[in-house]
Every structure is written in C-alpha cells, then in structure tokens.
Image 1 (cartoon, helix red, strand yellow):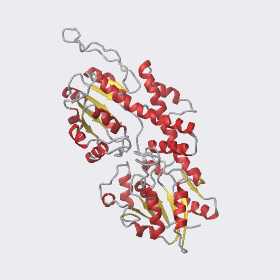
Image 2 (spheres, one colour; image 1 turned 90 degrees about the horizontal axis):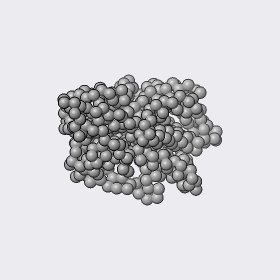
Image 3 (cartoon, one colour; image 1 turned 120 degrees about the horizontal axis):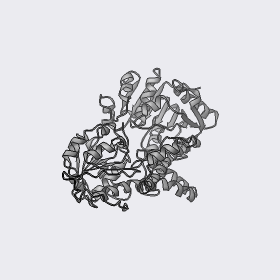
Length: 495
C-alpha cells in the first residue's frame, strides 16, 4: 500500500483550510501544505487573523502551523512534493451558457487537473474534495490520461466533505462518516486504503465508508438535497401555520418526536443558505434533466422554489406591516451571514431579503458581528444570472454599522436574519426608546420566542415565522385607545 507522507491541498477556502488543518493536527508525521493563487488569503492564513471564522479553527492552526502545516502560493512545488493532492477549489453555478443558473462550472477543477498533470512525476493520488457533479472524476481522469508521461501514474478518488459551517472543526474531528470513492481496480483500492489510513488516525474504522467513485459523488449531492428538502418542507408548513393559527415550532416538535422523522433540520426560518445546498440541488436538477428524468428534476426544483418563496414571503410581510411601503424608511437588518458562528455569506437569505427591500427603496442599516463591510457590499452589488444590481443605488441606500444599537436608532423596524446568540441578549428597552413608533421586530429565525411577552410589554409589534403573535393593545393614560392602538386585520402577503 502506498504510504502518504506529504499532502498538498489546492484551495485555501472554507473546505481546504479547516480540513487540512485538522489532518495536520491529527497526523503529526504527515506534512500538509495548503496552496492558493490568492496571495491575500495565504497571507491571512499565516497571520493571527484567519480569512474565515470557525469555532476552534484558530487553536487548531496555531498548534501545527510552521511544524507540519504550511500555507503557500507556490502551487507547483507543493504538487511536485506531494504523495496525495486534494482539489478543494470553488465549483460555482454557471452564470452563462448551457446550464446557466443550474449546472456547476468546473473550470477551476479542470485547471487544477491540467496543472497537476503538467508538473507531476511518479505516482500521485488526486482527491476531489470540492462538491462536483456526478462523473466529474471521469473528466479529471481523461485529462490525466491525455497528458500522461512514462514516469507518471494517477489514481483519482472522490472524498466529499460533509461539514456544517459553524461546527466544521467538531464535524471534522467527530464525523458521522467519511466517504471515499474510487476505482474497483487493484490500483484504485490501494489508493482508497492510502487515504483511509490518514483518516484512521482519529476516525473509527466503522465510520469510514468506501464506494465506487460515482456513488461517492452522487451521495454528496443527495445528502445536501435531502437536508435542503427538510428545510423547505417545514418552511412550507410555516406558511400554513401563519394563516391557521398553528405554531410551526409546536408542529415541528410533534412530528420530530417520531423516530422515523427525527427532529434535525426542522427549524423554520427565512430559508436555507450557504455554499452547498442551493448549488447542489440545482446541480441535481440539471443532472436529472440531462439524463431525461424531467419528473425527478421538477421534484427537486420545487425545493428551491419553496426556499425562494419563503424569502419573498417574509420580505412582503415586512412591507405590508410597514403600511405597505418602506420607501426611505430606515430598517435595521441584524445578521448577514447565512447562519451563526460563521462569517460566510454565500447564498445567505439576508442577501435576497436586502435586495427585495432595496427594490422598494428601503434604507438598510446592516450589522453582523463577523461579516466584513466589503463583503456585504460585494454581495449586494454582485450580478446574478438573471439581473444586475446598481452599485450607486446600493451605496446610497445601504449603511454598514459596527454597533447593533446604532443600526436600530431611528429605525422603523428590526429584521433578524441570522440567529446570532447576541441578538437575544440586546437591551430591547433601550432600542425601543431610540426607534420610531410603532416599532416593529421581524424575527426571521425564531430566536426571540421566549421574549415575545417582554417585547410586547415594552411596546414592540412582533412578527415571526410560522406563528401569529397576539399583539397586546396598549392603553393611553386616560384608558382610551388611540386609533393606532386599534387591532388591525391580518393582511394576506402580496407575492
């Protein structure tokens, strides 16, 4: 069996950086080099201010950086010296051409394969770590076969990641499973065993699953599609709860106690985000269409459509409650990352909600404890496959603040888009005093449930996902109700 002593990882992003840092910590006899063309990113990995935020990541990096963990821009040298090469580059959804808006763009994967073939010698194990469409390994293998030298041989494996951002280090150290796919030839099985031996340093053998390459690639897409499906399912029920008087949290608890269903991923919210869910479901849709399975494609497409519907529905609710207009109204948007405990904003629901409100002329004051201002502005101005966004308008209507209290001053409403724990600990009495009245809170993450009575006593109008909040009716000093205090009929959301 080939022994792996030197690992190179191409791509120092959310997958490559944390994964290889944990491998280096758990395998002190293995030298791990993470490379990237982005000099600023590599400089950040070599500093005390890492380019990504993950709980526990800084401690892992500090424990082995400069010992057996290295970050470099010298890609060719790292590839030459490596026994095993991880490909952990971005695979974004195509923005033009065939498959626009659904198919994965594999240009970075192809570039890596060509570079590996060009500079390598001897025997190399090349591992897909990026999320790729089924049979992408075959494309890599064809590039290698067309560029093979007499002194060179390759084995291509699939080793998809199943990390949840915010808990990535825990997931890496205590995974539910590690999946490795490869050829069923003797050479392929030897390569699988070589990678398996790395993980066996800390992962129990019964949690390491080996399959053929195609099963491994499809398992990654299917896993994310199933998780996204659960979120869209409970979000669809949340819409029904709001018009019937049911509470989606109570419904989720009731059905989650069924062991056949389970309680995970039954949290209603403004919709799922992150780099994988939407991209992988769309990739699955495109794959089904490509192999003439239109019914299957339509089934999975509906998962995306419900997610979009939930975002639009929540945005419409904000506009309706604010007397059907948000033009020139200050709205405090708390949270921009797609989930708590990460600084990642990719496909964050906050982006979509912000855009819907900006289209209506709202003035957004955005606060997030971990997302940088430049990233927020980049996300709001970046073109999408269907539309472009006016940079001048975004710059005029969006203000990034570093203090949540500052964001809420003179605001008409607070919109919670990320479930940061700190948002449950704010001084809402102080915030209410500084806001325009009536003051609204739109809880898109159901993190303020335990505070509803307190918030209403202060004077807030509370709106949340999947539940009607019975508003208290404040009285004037004389005991008479003002016109504004009269209960208003529920309005249907205009979508």
